[in-house]
Length: 251
Length: 237
Image (cartoon, rainbow over all chains, first blue to last red; front, top):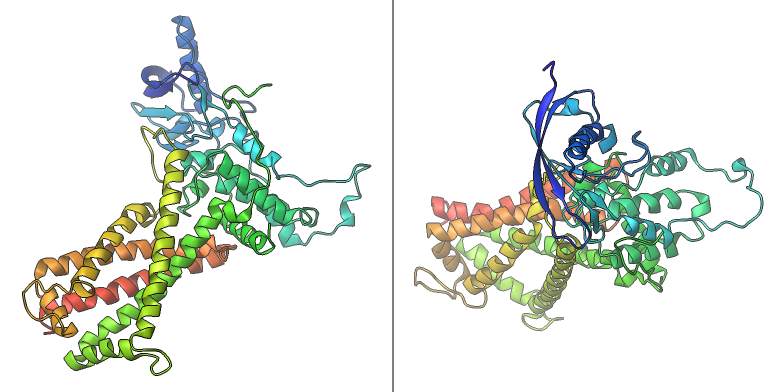
C-alpha cells in the first residue's frame, strides 16, 4: 500500500454533443489515498497528455464543495459513495485494485457537452423563471426591519444550502429535478420577502421544470440520498403543497 | 456566452398549475386513495368467508340491496363500479403519462446505477401496477363478469365459487403473488400519495406516513391472503 493504489477506470468518452460516445478503460497506478477524486483524474489526464491523447473533460471549480460545479456519476452514485461533492471525495473511499465506472449526469435536460461535462443551463432557466424575489430599487433595507421567526429562518437557511449541482436529477430514476425546485420553493417560501410572488413562482418554476424535459417525482428518495447538502425530501412535500395552493388560487 | 448544447433555450410563458406534472401526480394520489378505501372494504367483505357459507352469501347479496329503497336495486353497487372505473381510468392514464415523461427524461441509461435511498417497493410501482392491472382483469373474469369455476362446479353461489377456486393450488398461488404485488404497491403508494398531497412537510410527519403505508400494506395484503390460504388449508370448506 505504500506505493499507492492501482485502479481500473471505466470512463465515458464523447467528443462532442453529437458524438455517440462510449466507455473507455484506463489504468492508473500509485494513487495516494490522500488524493481527492479529481486529483486522481488530474493524474490520469497528465498521463494522457504525455501520451499525446485528448485529456478527459470534467467540470470542477472551487474544489471546496461549495460551488456546485463538479459532478460525475461514480460507480452508479452521484458524487460517489460519500455524502459530499466529487471534489471533496477522497481516494481513501476506494481500495487498491478497484474498478471505478465514471459517467456524466444522465438526463435529456442535461445534454453532454464533452466527455463528463454536461450543460446544466436548464437549472438556471428554472431559477430565471421564478426563483428570485423582486425587490424595489434603492438602498438595501435594514436587515432587522422584517422579523423572521427562528424556525422559518433555520429551514430557509438549511435548504438554501442547495448548490444546484444536479446530483438529485442524476440520481432520480425519473430524471426529475423536484428536489432542486423544492429546495428553492421552500427557501423563498419560508421568508416574508418571498410571500408576494409565492404562488406564481411555484407554477412558473414547475412549468419551466416540465418544459425542460425533467421527469415527474415518484417520491423514491434517491435524490435526497445523493444530495451533498443533505436537502431532505420534505421540500418536495412543500413544493406539492404550494402548487396545490396555487391551483386553488387559480394560477 | 451562448449556450453550447441547448440550441434554443426558451422560458415558457403563461404556465398553468393544472398543466404541470405535479397536477398529474395529484390525480395519481387521489385516485390511488380511492382504491385504498375500496380494497379495505373489499377485504372486510372477504373475511366474511370465515363466518361460513350463509353469512358470506348474505353479505354479497346485501351489497345489491344496500341503500334500498332510496336507491334502486344494485344502485349502490353501480355507483361504486362507475366511481372505481373513473378512478382506474384516471390512475392508469396519469401513470402512463408520467412513465412516458420519465423515459424521455433519461433516454441514455447509466452503465452502472445504484439505488441508494430507495426501498425495493418504490422501484416496483410501474411493473407492479401493470401486474395488478392484469390481475384485475383476471380477477373480474373469475368472480364478477365471467364467473369461471375452474373445477366446473356451480357459479351462481359466491361462497362455493370462492371455495372451488382456492381449492386449486395454482389459483391460490396466483392470488398470493398478486397480493404480494399489491402490498408492495401500497407500501410505497400510500406514502407517495401523502407526499404528493403535501402533507409530509416535517421529518415526523414523513415517518408517520411511512409507518401508515407499511401498516396498510400489511393489513390489506395480509387480510386478502387469509381467505385463499384458509381454503387451501381446509379451514374454510
